[in-house]
Image 1 (tube, rainbow, N blue to C red):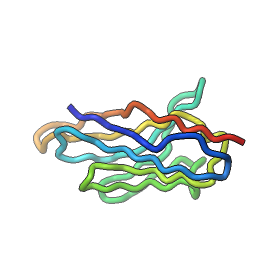
Image 2: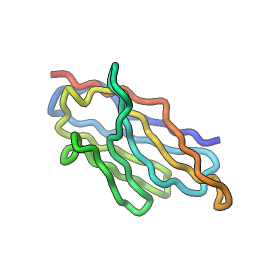
Image 3: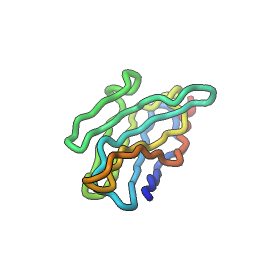
Image 4: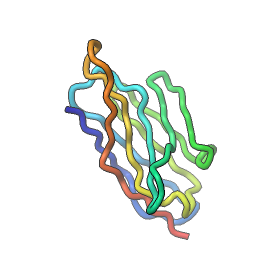
Length: 121
C-alpha cells in the first residue's frame, strides 16, 4: 500500500507564507506526477499545482506568481511554497500522486488526508 502524508498547514495572516510538504511511503517504483489540490467549504476540489518527475509544472491561474511547487524525487516528496497568501486561499489542501508500484503494473492515483490552510484578513 502507498500512503501520502502531508504537513505544514496552519493559520496565517493575509500576505504571509506557508510551506506544505507531502511524502509518499510504501512500495514505490515511480511517481508521476505529484501535486496539490484544494477544497474550500461548499466548493469542488480544484487543482492548485502539479509537477512531473522531470520538473515540468502546471499551476492554477489563481496561484501563478505566488505559489511554487517543487519535488525531491529521491525522497518521494513534493512541496508547495505559498507566498502572498490571500483569504480566498483558505481551504483544505490535498496531496495527490500517480504511483507506479513496479515497472510491470499500471499506475494508481492516491490522495493524502488533507491539511487545513486558513488565511485571515
